[in-house]
Image 1 (cartoon, rainbow, N blue to C red):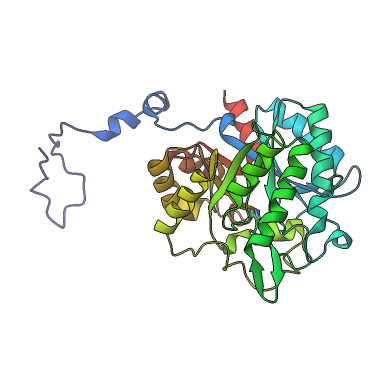
Image 2 (image 1 turned 180 degrees about the horizontal axis):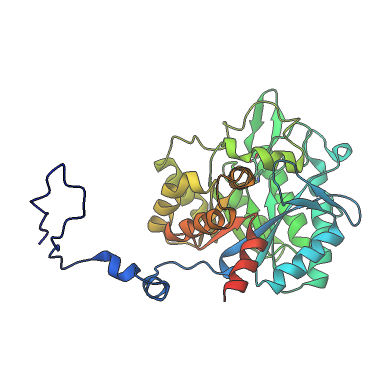
Length: 347
Ligand code: PBG
């Protein structure tokens, strides 16, 4: 029973002496750090982290990305070092994204099928040195096309079925080089089933598919496009294949299709502006579901904390814990090494 103090006149400035007669005082469970730890519902651990890294040609290269402070593009030898660090920090998996030499890009994204492309060389090198870390590769043509789109462009249309045929070949190229998880981010119709059939046909039954099942046409990918060098060349937007940010039921239909076609795990992307989608997807399908805290989300936190407007570490931990609370089994995040180190130091 809640008794409101009845005798406080508007002029009375000192605290009321009346004691409330409350059965429930939720603050009791928050009174000390040990008590808060005892009742905590969601805990972030290194097991929740997937670290996306950018690759660049050369040796001993760490090329900064202006819009992503603290993130560098890494040459293959540096990527191997990153994998060693990830293993030390107990990060289970890396996701690889190449910045392809502009001379290697063409309208059809042919470099995606080169068995010695940057991603394939990184896969082999990391597998050799750090065999126990999971390696995730992105299936989409944007790092390889001269127009920066994820598929093949005819006139002003990204043609679906022809693109899917190339994506299957790209996925096989990655699997042969040692990819453990194939992650199609292209949003073409029917690609999950086609890739599953392709993989099984070459005895890659154990290679998992992590589908970017609900991927939105988002403004928050800007810094990523700087990182892989597509921002400057991209013509038009990706709205004919990535989802309309206004839609939610459509995400459930997209996810249902990807599961029917063989997806083992799901990604919802972007992350924080789409926690409602993450929550619905996890509650509806109960598959392992990951959030992608994308480049623009990372950039916002870094820019604000760089200006002294946010506490970087707290914003990082809070944003990642929010994904867990919304139902994520894990998060793809550029904060992965920093947060894993922090979690290790806190123990
Ligand atoms: C491309 C791809 C994108 C991201 C991951 N894969 C960008 C895009 O769709 O244009 C974005 C990741 C990020 O912003 O961190 N297939």
